Image (cartoon, rainbow, N blue to C red; front, side, top):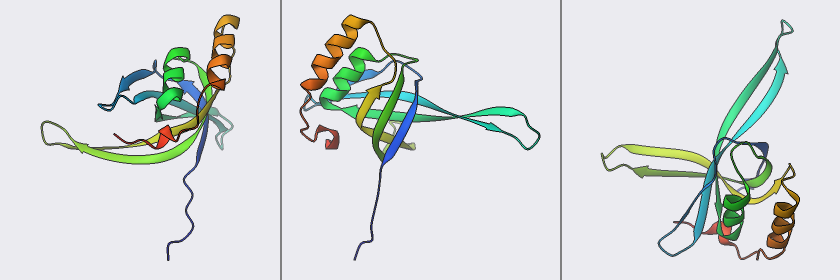
Length: 137
């Protein structure tokens, strides 16, 4: 009998690059970008330090289209999602793998221009919860 499982991620950070949107052969939009998550701490000697974790994010469907339209490098966002592992083989027969976060929901933590914010609020109301985030390539 399988035991209990939980795969949930909550992150707040800044985009390390502009979102890149593409479409699967079936026409489903998928957007990817990097997120830098910082942690401030003090060493035993009292020195203040900062540790940064870099995470790759993927957003499917309409939410991905919105992310590509409104986010840019440096944007501060909150994301909710799940960890996904994938592997592939390059054309040179090298094996590659990555651990990334598939984003289910995200929120902007900084205000843009008022017109962009108004357009975003209209767009968010029209996002259907169709389970597009579960689409796989």
